[in-house]
Picture 1 (cartoon, one colour):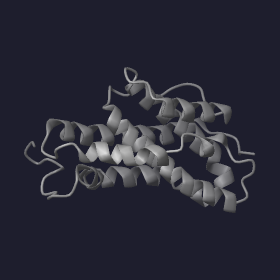
Picture 2 (cartoon, rainbow, N blue to C red):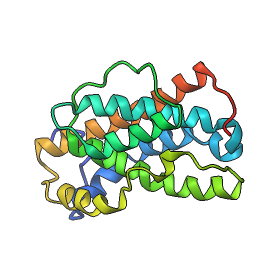
Picture 3 (cartoon, rainbow, N blue to C red):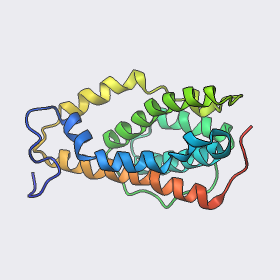
Picture 4 (spheres, rainbow, N blue to C red):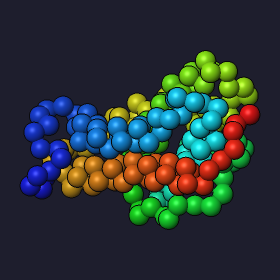
Length: 185
């Protein structure tokens, strides 16, 4: 572990929880970047879908040496929703486990958004909200993370890569807003 490591003083809890704690601010900043969707779902849904496509595309390219059927399924759904096109600058190569952690976690969050959109009367529901069910792989991702020693170089790299993946989503949200989009439905 390097001096001033974000993993210092994490105690005996597993690496997944240490990773969550070390990247909490990054995660919260990413959630804030998409907060306006919750205020006016019809108005912001196209931008949200576009941002998701941009981020998932950048992250898929960051693990090109390790293709992910999960990411391919989500990108296909977003393409069906009309969100594809263009691209963010490519993300640097990232650890596939870091990408899996962030993208599977985002799918768990999408389930919450789906309920809110249903309550807001969004119909038809975009394909994105049915794609790439994260629940089936989440426990495996957690187990793989907990098998990593917190003091290892890989743990340090995973923290950096998870932060970078969150920034991809933030950059995608900014880009989607700058592009502007039509109302959904």
